[in-house]
Image (cartoon, rainbow, N blue to C red; front, side):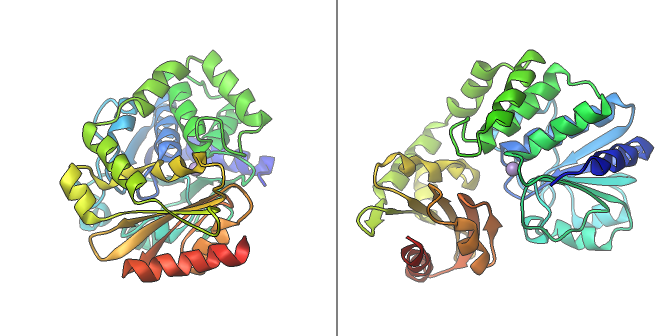
Length: 332
Ligand SMILES: [Mn+2]
């Protein structure tokens, strides 16, 4: 739980900085990029420099948030460039929506080495606690809500752009206000952000009615792969490298796909397996609350929340699938 002192320390840390590096977890989702964008805008409005850095490429449907392309660590910026300072001289590192080294592949090497202060803003229960100052509120539906609380605390303006970015954060982490975490606070915050200029209909169209044909075809492949277990309570789906190659879709196109089969009446627990280049399978887990999927993910080295979690599982597929099904069965 957040205590007011954390807001005070956070605001103090930002105020005394001059140049901030702002990043988030690999495979950034709407909460990650929305919170990053809001923090960057806020820092710039305070007359300081803010450099966003992504750990993997931005999905097309979030590109409207940034006026210029955001550099991607590993593609545009190497670990060496970051370490030697040729990417920029920073006096504060801000990490949003994660507090775990495993969520920061390769970047964690630099992070463990740096002497710079680190500010963490996050809503996950699990974390490595690497922040010099940490603003953690596990009751927040999205990191964007904590960022919003910080802006209100510090009386920093919520511009139309910031409101839009925070609305993206809030709406994506709540599955467009339909997940269990969509509490009164979420709707109060959403309402306030609309009053600050966020336009929900336009944001929805940009994020959810903006598929490429390749992405939609990939969705079709996933639906075709559907299998049930335990009288239809468990739904399993998978996508192979061939599915991507033949449709022309890319890895990040699977974002939110896992939620689709929760439309089926009998389904209580869901796993989507996506084949990675290294023969591992990225496994996304969802539940209606009857199974704690974070427990399952953590057992195999992953993490997340009670109803939404993820983990990388070694292949072959049958083994990965078997392990997850066994965990689901014992918990249902
Ligand atoms: Mn989040």
